[in-house]
Image (cartoon, rainbow, N blue to C red; front, side):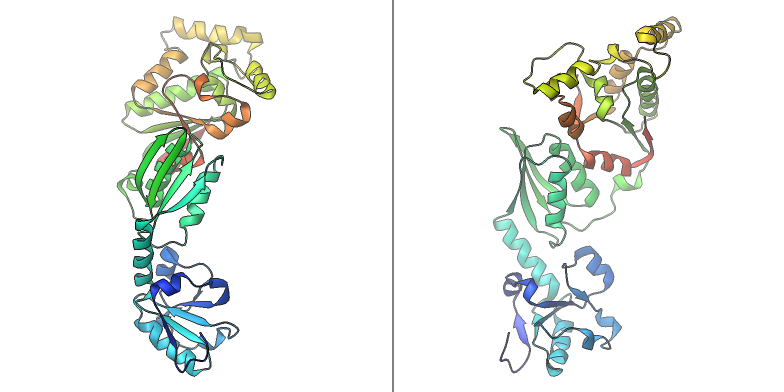
Length: 346
């Protein structure tokens, strides 16, 4: 981009190969367009705002101008060239560039290697990678954290991106995603779901959580219960499961209650006597036991999710959890919370 007699024309392919640190990008589109599909580091001077600020653009680097379809950028590139700038215009504008990238990505989608990353690492890596990509750009992702299977579904649904494929094989979760502009969906409009974060492992709090969850499910609401840290004890099988553990994991396993029958009260537990009294009173008064409440919740479609990050910290393995429990991460919880009109932390 030197020794030129007029401004230069760049094809979308040439534009895609630019070293962006060596040029100044000038985006002439409106701010709302830039917000949806901007290019990081570009200066935004909307064409509709006039030419008063053109002289504020630095001259230390070549200036590459682009707009939506390439007509405005030619006009501005010519003005800049006349003012002594080393200027170029993107032929076809951002739309042509987006189409070119999409076609290239579909031929050979780029691989995002998220294997070995823990929540929220895989989702963050995907989001960061796709943030400045145009609509229609496709990528493949490989991850090894079980929670990613749930997280990537929810993330795509909540961000408007399209999950083309999701395959789990040989311990590797493979997803193909196509970038799309976020659109309002039916799931966004119907915000009457219920979300619970079950942090406590106390019997009384757990009973309350499942009573409310069953009531919400009976009203036809979608209910997600996200169990984290001490709440994971609720989901443990009552009998010991043989799994390989480190010394620290074994220590955690020995100290944590194993299943619902080992839970104590948050107050007046009295060495376990309080919990037995509560259970006895519930039986006398015909109130469903905690175990019955859990079975009822699962039967009525309540989604029970175990936080994998907390499981990793506390050394709890999936094999130790009761049937019907999903593994999820932060994206699963946030996605559920966004469609809820009530979120409870218990």
